[in-house]
Amino acid sequence: MALRGPDEPSEHRYRANPFIWVIPLILSGIGILMITSTTSPNSFVLTGTPFQTGLRQLRWLAIAMCGMFFVYSVPVRVWRRLSAPLYLLMWLLSWLPLIPGIGDAAGGASRWIRLPGLGVSLQPGELLALALALHVAKLLTRDGDRDPMKIFCRILVLIIFTALPLLAQPDLGTTILVFVVAMGMFVERIGWRYPLIAGGLVGGVAFPLLILLEPYRMRRVFAFLDPWEDPLNKGFQAIQGLIAFANGGVWGAGLGHGFQKLNYLPAAYTDFIYAAIGEELGFVGTMCVLALFGFWLLQTRAAYFRTQDDFKASLIWGITLTVLLPFVINIAGVTKMMPLKGMALPFISYGGTSLVTMWARIGLILRLEKDSYLEDEDDDRARTAA
Image (tube, rainbow, N blue to C red; front, side):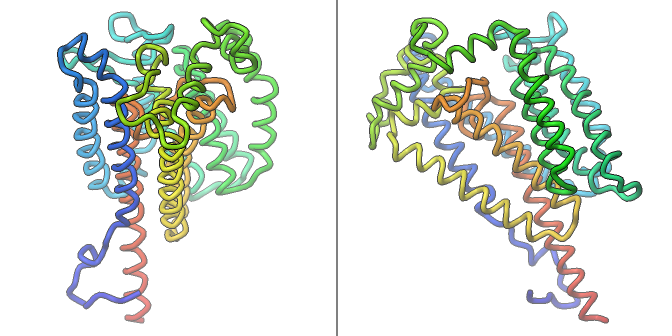
């Protein structure tokens, strides 16, 4: 590594890895195109303009980019110091959707907070998942007691605490997400043994009970096992998603020429946007999306191995999991590899909160990478001076 001159500030030598933010920008652009395409018929009927929903997502992208720059401007040590207050604030916000007049219900769930005068809703569960990853990274790497059992118990209590408002909404998908992210971060830093036991108990006992207690979850399981048993009700969405992929073939029907968006495929611009991509851009388009995500993961992996600080490495890993898991859950559900979970496709699906929080993750990764680079430069300079 080339050393800077004695009077040259290290900040002037740092260059961010452009792929960490360029690839999400490409994915966000694909999302805006597909949102515009899949909503243009309904938007034209309701508002007289076919691009209303796409323009709204474009405005959210502008807000998300501002959020990314704000997060990037804050040093990592500040985020680490504020991890507990931020987590507590997000936890309290996650109870607000349950309050009548404040919460905004949709599809039988109360997961959103209506922002008066703005005409938009905020989903605090998205913010809570990010705050959890930040605080778990701190718990795993703070000085003092290094007993793995004690650390695991603290994280398990934190997961249960996090699950309370999420299950009350109800939001089983985000609950599963925070559990897997926290356990994944523990595995990365300490080991497999305790997460393997906890995962077995949750997967074998708690998870089946949560499904049995809610009829709509059982309907999703039955629709996954045999969607053609009730093709006009329980299995309708899964079948229409598969039809969209079949219509697209290899090269797709062409941007704007898909038929499933004409009220055949519900939520074509949110949870099922990957199926809409398959219909209009074909197998090639869906593989390009997968390739972009895969290449982005390689960049975050490089940032992870570049840092020598345990907290930064753990946080990069945790943030990566909070992007990777929704990506896998969404695509697995749409392609009928697992029951539908109603989780947005990162950077692509319509939704302001999801887009803003995803770009906040990008800003945090860039900041972690920058601080790691500056520390390496300072170490090199100290060794040279010695």
